[in-house]
Length: 122
Image (cartoon, rainbow, N blue to C red; front, top):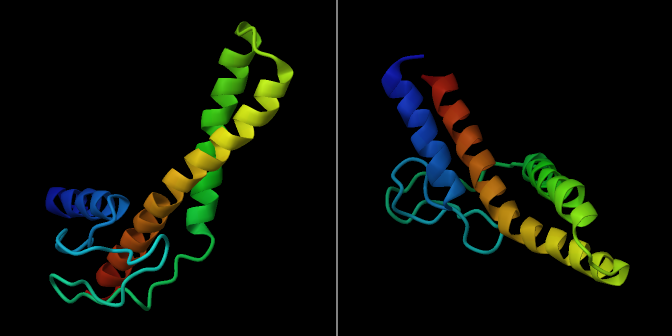
């Protein structure tokens, strides 16, 4: 893999994570919370056919699990917090983190699938 190709890979992945078109970075990638646009409004690249399936959910579970695991292993044993606060706070925190991570994970997977399809045909 050449240096330019490597830079393009990371750039398109970063653009996808930010919810931008992986090709140009100008248009939006998602029109709603998780619904991809049919075409980029800036460059016209088609994204409606790309299906990320379970990839974004998997990545979200991995990220949320690692964040909550660190919190439960480091903060909880050393904090003097009532058990009811933990039983309320940790699930709320898990849902909030998941809501933030999920669209970014979807953008990453759409960018990776788009990039793979582009290199496959070339």
